[in-house]
Length: 307
Length: 268
Ligand SMILES: Cc1cc2nc3c(=O)[nH]c(=O)nc-3n(C[C@H](O)[C@H](O)[C@H](O)COP(=O)(O)O)c2cc1C
Image (cartoon, rainbow over all chains, first blue to last red):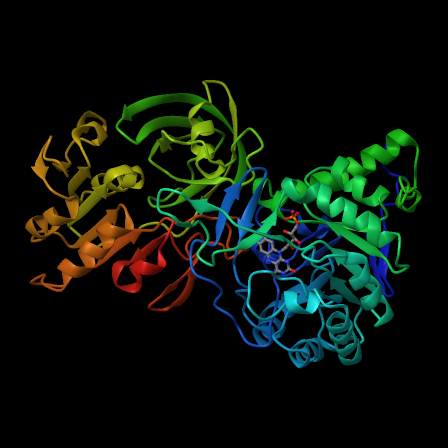
């Protein structure tokens, strides 16, 4: 029934996916961790853990807690560093059909450019997602995502250091996300993904202390979905590069909401923790919906709900 | 490790004290118990819009297809992070349960050990029954020290494997010896080739202190609990600093040599 359905999407020049569903950075490691449980080659793409110039240890425990309809996390960009990624992970990825996009972060503009240049020409890497939106570390992220001039500067620096497609991942922790979106588009971004987590906290009233070791964490999961959807809707209305939607997506129906809001593709994060099959189920759900509606090309649904 | 749709065969409250109830659950799925080692755990999906799975130790093996789990349910479980266990306790016979496992490294019983000493603090008994059963079935002598705050929280001896030398302790002295179970360890150390423990982080801190005065060094393995995200080592939500660098409790643990852990790092 779903044989003549075309789920493929072009999310950036030179980056075509067999379907629009990717695993979100930080929730799917380097991909191999889930190999036993998930047929990862069926994914649209895998976005790996945020990667920095040097390896990082991350924040103090507790790093994660369930809140109503979501989770707060404060991993603090623990990662193996770009050198180990190039040496140990990329060769594994080079043998995969599924494209892997490397999510990068840094403390300075130069850091971002350096990480990007170390990925240049490495087999097994299909693109770069620039994380200017991590709320969990003092440096290395969000300050670049909350100021349009800084966001543009990072984008330019990364574009100048790589020939890979560059996706810039935006923070929702801003007054007007469209200003940042327009700034990174002008600076040369090939695509925009949004949203990263929303800053939040929870307090243990018996111990009289924050429930997260780092005091605050990033909120993700179903709780942020309506916020993410509205931001995607607004950003898709003011840029012409592809927009990738993310935030609380846990079913085909919710993925389709983002696509109809104008997203070319989606990322699934927290839902993978609930069920590792989530991303694959979403792909199935989307093609079933298309078959039922008699739509053969996914692009026919992109922005379908825009007014 | 695999993801399975299990069927709940049994799920009943085993005991209840001031702050929690312990539920005993049996789950069945083809081949579920194969490759399970003591100290390993499953990630259980909770119903009712819960986002995170809950890591639950393997309590016992009931057959090739059936595992037994012991789940502590906080009685003040209003908040989302406490609700997961509550929902698992509400599963009834015949209900489905999605589970992933077995996960983690598991305890390592040395083939050369003749006798082992096991110490359980509170819900720490959960992985240790399986450990005691495994050790006994390979012909080892097992001494099991079991502690709880009061006698209401003590795991029933009738459900523990026959042939185990059991010693009970309560903080308030309402049953067995008075005081924390960690205080009993030195007394039973002499014949043991290996020591295993599971309990609150404070118990390990006490043990680390005591160990400096042990007449002979003995290897001690402990099971750690921190909150987890994925359970497969992908998200780094459960990472802790150890004496040998940063480790993921879900993948590199949950069993660690007690000398490797820095107790202040293990917070929940
Ligand atoms: C445990 C965890 C770790 C994350 N790590 C990263 C990261 O390293 N880089 C990044 O850009 N986003 C990171 N994120 C954000 C996700 O990629 C995603 O943007 C966010 O969680 C919202 O989507 P969701 O509701 O589907 O999870 C992380 C999220 C979680 C829950």
